Amino acid sequence: MGKEKRIVVKIGTSTLTGGDTHLLRPQIVELARQISELIRNGNKVCVVSSGAIAVGREALEFPDLPKSIPVKQMLAAVGQPRLMNVYEQIFEIFDCKVAQILLTREDIRDRRRYINARNTINSLLDHDVIPIINENDSVATEEIKIGDNDNLSALVANLIEADLLVLLTDQEGLFTSDPDHTEKAELIHRIESESIPEEIWNAAGGTQNGLGTGGMVTKLQAADTARRSGTHVVIAKGDLPNILTRITAGEKLGTHICSLVDTLESRKRFMLAGVVQKAAIIIDTGAKRALLGGGSLLPVGISEVTGEFDRGDIVPVKGSDGKDYAIGLVNYSSDEVQKIKGRQSGEIEPILGFAFGDEVIHHNNMTVLR
Ligand code: GLU
Image (cartoon, rainbow, N blue to C red):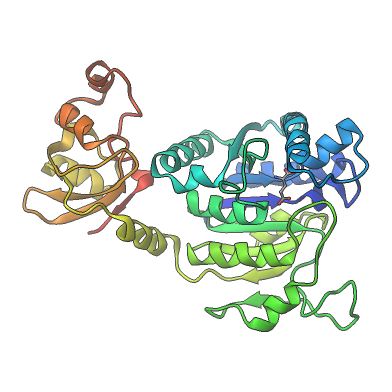
C-alpha cells in the first residue's frame, strides 16, 4: 500500500444486518478484520456506524419500524450500547480498542464543540483507538439532527481531514438506473466532473431500503460534500470479500467520486474563510522555527496577543514583523492566552486552573502559510 491514509468507513444498517432484522455478526467480524489490517498498515480509521435503531428493534422485538420519533429514539437508546458492545467484543479479537462518539449537527456547527469533537477524535486516532461514530439519536431534535449517517460520515471526513471515505452499502455502487428494476443498469465507475451530472442524481433517486434512512441520494449528497473538502469517496458493496483492503490497495471496485481539491488546500480554504479579523497571536523566532518544522504553537513562544478571540476560533499567527506565518484553531481564548503567553506548558493549569492541552494551537489544527 502507498502512503498511510486517514479513512472513514461508513457502515449502513443494510450491511450490518444483511437486510434482515438482526445483526449479521460474521459480516461485522469480516469488516473488523479488514479495519484492523488497515490500522496495522499505518492508516487511521474512523467508523461511522448505523444500526442502533435496528438493534433496539431486535432487543425489544419490534416487528416494524415505528413512525413515532420518541419511540425511534427509545429504540436507538436501547440499541446503541448493545451495538457498541458487539463492536467492542469483535474488535477485541483483532486486538483493537474502540470508543463511542455520538454527534449531533450542533457539535459540528458550534465552534467550541467542533474543536472538542475534532480534538477527541484526533486523540483517539493518534492512540490507534477506533472511534465508532453515530448520530446521537436519542437526544437529536429536528433542528439539530443530521438526519442520516451518510451525511454524518461526510461531516466526519471533513472534521478529521480524511483522504478516503468508503460508504458501504448493499449495492455495488451507483448505477445508471435502479438495478433492481432495470436490467440494463450499468455501474458508474468514476465521477470526476466538478458537478455531479443531473442524470446521475436522477438515477440515484430510485433506491430506498426499509431499514436504513439512507438510499443512494444521501450517499451522493455525502460524496458531494466530502469531495469538496478534499476526500476521495468510494461507494461499494459491504459484503464483497476484502472490500476495504482491496479498495485501499487501489482495486477499481464500486463507484469512485473523486475529490476536487487536496486536503491541504481544502484546510487552507476552510481556515482562511473563517479567520477572526482584527486579532492575532504574535510569536518569537523560536516558535517560528517550530511551526515551520511542523510543530505546535506552545505558550512559551507567544510574545503578544492582539484583539479578542474565543476557544475554537481560527486566528492568524504573525511574526513581530507583522508577517502571517500560520492560521489555526485555538485551544484557548485571547484572555487565557494573555495569561499564559511566554510561560511553560506545565504552568497552564496552575495559572488558569484548567488545561485544554499543552498547545495553544495543535499542529493538527494549523495551516502554515510559508
Ligand atoms: N443513526 C441511525 C441508527 O443508528 C441510523 C441512521 C442511518 O441509517 O442513516 O440506527
